[in-house]
Length: 49
Image (cartoon, rainbow, N blue to C red):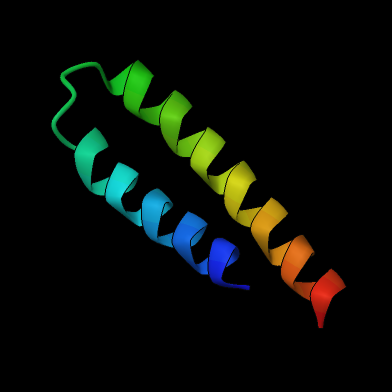
């Protein structure tokens, strides 16, 4: 479970960093991938519980 917590932390840091990007298109694409990864993490948490 520690790995999943670290993955969530990394996603939060990435979200903070994408605010610095100039390209709105790129920010949206990255945010979409972050959301996909969050859903995957939640699915893994359900599997392990």
